[in-house]
Length: 104
Image (cartoon, rainbow, N blue to C red; front, side, top):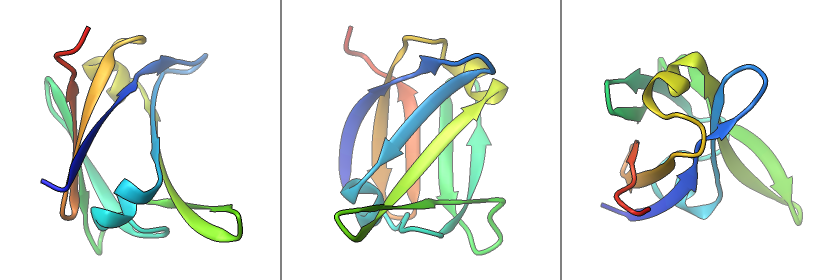
């Protein structure tokens, strides 16, 4: 495992959103414009780097440097995490796993 963090699933008018960005994405292999696939299970969402991936890591700029962003925003996210849920994020090489956090 490379790193862990937590975030919060947030309600929007359309669905539920999970947003992550920054250096931990780069370290896990999710650099800007990297293709990846999303696997949704009952209690987890897993992102896997794939040359044939259906989605791409967004490239934003901060202080003139590229900054990767992943914005998961769908009804599939809402099926796993309700709005306000603390989400545990586990970064591994070419994989990111979202699960419900054990923290309150």
